[in-house]
Length: 336
Image (cartoon, rainbow, N blue to C red; front, side, top):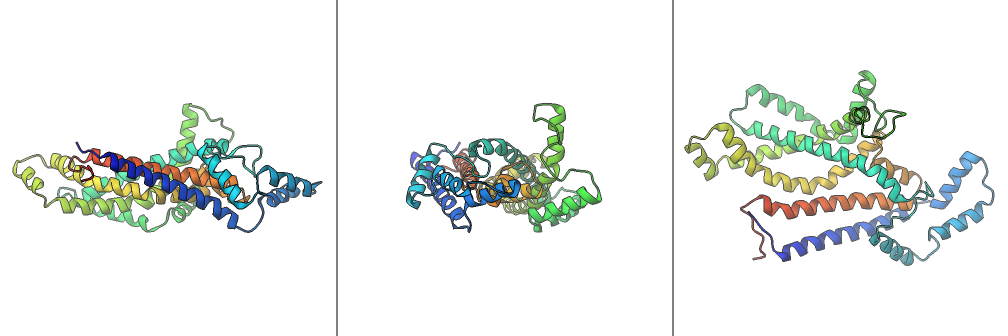
């Protein structure tokens, strides 16, 4: 069993917190570079529905003071960092008096579910297809069908979602193209609601799976081909072990380790792709929340949602970095 030193643990934690700090700083700066004023945009939306907003100047002045937008930029930054350390994401300007934490709490489970299920599917299917492509006992028909199915890999998830919407939403109306569950349903742990969630989440999940599993298949195939010439493979075949046992016990087990490292590196890209997919399907996740915050110039909502996604990505990378030495018994990180 591998192990890692305290020095390695501290270095990984330092990188983790440094990543969060840099991301938090960027999320503070970028929304403020956009043209327009968030309070003015909020008053404009009120006027659009009401026709006229009485005392708009006083409202703008009081709300700018309420959200601290009149403070010097360095004071706003320090207050923002302090609130972030206290896990206080503040109020949403576009959904006041709702807090960003409340909005994120409703949207985050949907994104975690979509990304989690999609990751399990494409990582399992992709690596299995790659292993079968490299295994000499795989039927020729299957070796021909797998590369054909991998042609979707060249299409970005957002464009693939449009294709799936056109085919399965309009031409063959088999799946819904809007929302996370049926209209009028109340979220609860019931077979009807869970079935509706799976039904509505099929196309968004397939948009991610079809666009990504080919990369994992190609990577796994390359690792399997490399492993075939190793000494332990020659020894396993000389022992007369069953081919299927050699496949999963010797080949897949050793080839899967670099794939896990690649998964940690690609988590950020996966989250970005899922955000665009959620916007395309109006899925009730973090992507739709970020899109709403951008449209309304909601600084708090943009900062909070983007920071949560970045922290989730950095945390997943940290967990894989810490567990990788424990998975591969050949690796020992003792700081030598």
